[in-house]
Image (cartoon, rainbow, N blue to C red):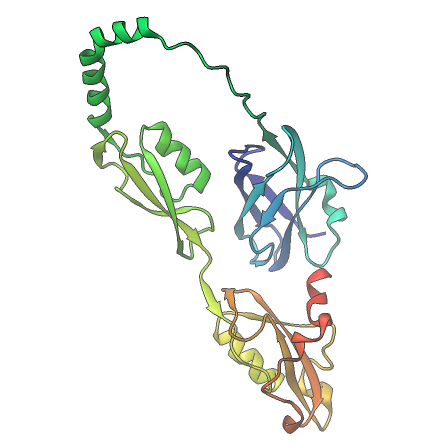
Length: 309
């Protein structure tokens, strides 16, 4: 079993309008790179199995030795009754079963608040209107003073999105977020405007730019020899692996014939993050035997089975 560890930004998620998220930091403590999967599983045994309400962006990743990857786990409990829902998050090697890492599971509690019941209408508070009229000018003056009084914007760069938004709002500002491609850990703040330390009016809006994986396109390698395909993929910053439908892995496997790429997954031209796996299906034969206009993985479900190993 590999040395895979995980820490969470928070063990509890209080959902707002049924939605929330957290950041899971997964570390590969082994001496070699590992293909690591972050999975979400029911937090308690039931029949039928309970829902996890979880969505994980890019759950399968290759993590270098000693490196840490940050996964953003989003939750959506729309339609669920109020209460607490436990969800297990397990980081495990793609070459093992998640059950082998059950003792390393982290249980996250999702809290769905009860819907507020409508209150009966109250009689119009005429007395308070009269009193309010007397002190109106003083109250307005105090409100304007606190709203427009300058304050220092907190510096939240490198912090996870949820933590950064809370810090900004607790300081009396409004927070908006936008996604930007970056090599920084996914889900962390890479830039903010106004910058940390600037003095602006309390209640102003601070825009946070959140790191999203750098996307590239899967290159066209169908019809190339397996060696040429590996060079093209490595040059694009991608890794090559073989599907269970691969007939050969090197030209030596093909004898006096060649070993050519007959299909890839994901499909050529599709977006993919840097250092991700591209699965190839290979065929033994002559180059003319491979139809370079057709990707066989589009019709062969075995092209995806390697992801379930």
